[in-house]
Figure 1 (cartoon, rainbow, N blue to C red):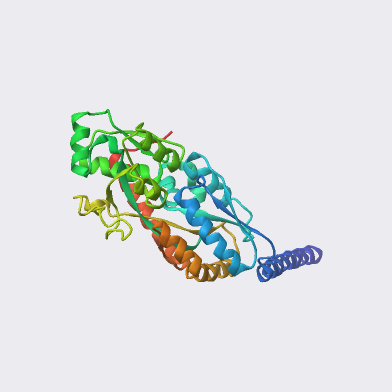
Figure 2: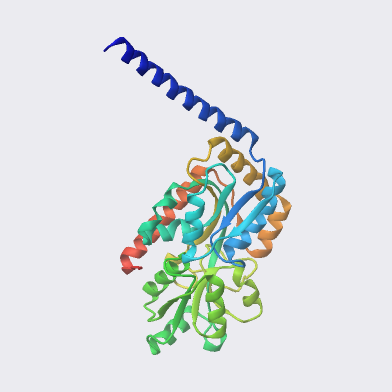
Length: 329
């Protein structure tokens, strides 16, 4: 190789190394000074739903711990897929995060081929879990799973099952219920759990399932009749509602979960800082009080534990989709 070519090659290599070193140094300084401004916490579902409610409680506590505002931003639509994608594709600088739900993290990637970006999100920590509760309209005159199923079979195709959207976790959980009971009920997707709840209250639909918190007011007001909850144990706030196992449906012992995630490429130092902030925030009195009042169970985790929880959920829903031959457009 001519000397001048070798010299140019070495010079090019030194330049690449210098640029790489500069980028690494810049990233390290950015991580050291983080956070220097407000953080956006994306919620991919509508205000008033379980994801939004839990996000706002945690955001306030994180703001105290990080000494910067944590602003909840609802980016709704497409069953949570729009907001989740926005978070996954955001700049990985620690200033845009996602408060994710089991629905968008485990169910949607199984059903929608365009959700591959979800797998790139970096888990930070779980935040909360909550049982689902299956409810119906009081005008139906049923109080148990057996009574509901018997009515549905007497009127095949006449009762509707409302969900927060095609491919949402409460849609797939409803599919488990229909498969387990053989109830001939028609699935009707709505644009979010709040709309689905209102449809059941109005009598447009006769069945839905959702995590407990958005339904507490309607349950206590008698606007909805609970059939069972999916937790392993009865909820102390609703001790009269049987568990799935007590209702004869042990395969439906499934909990919803919520947690914090960051875009791929977020510096490990920032992820570690966020995880520590989550530990402190979840242990704080305001979060404990808010979660207790709303029926959430506080759950802190390592990033690895959250990743395992997500993988387990995807495997569960993949089995449901295959067994029920669920397809979406």
